[in-house]
Image 1 (tube, rainbow, N blue to C red):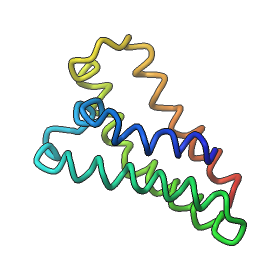
Image 2: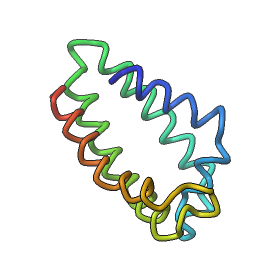
Image 3: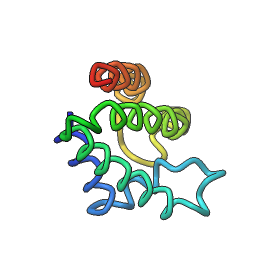
Length: 109
């Protein structure tokens, strides 16, 4: 799980434009800040998962992050991919996948 979030966090800095497309219109003015915050949060969460004394707190932080970014997933679905060529079935699958990721993080609490 730590590797998953470390990769995701680093990817926010490698491919920021991808994440800008996921930003709902009402947050567009802050898309760069949001991208950095989410990327740093994912990296810190990954590091926290590797340290036994911070593992539970890191997992709770990841759960909070997953809840916070859920509106972006809804926007991505309702906007039919926000200009990206992603099949609707994959966008629809991503919504319940968020619950799987939350359950996975909860296992570390």
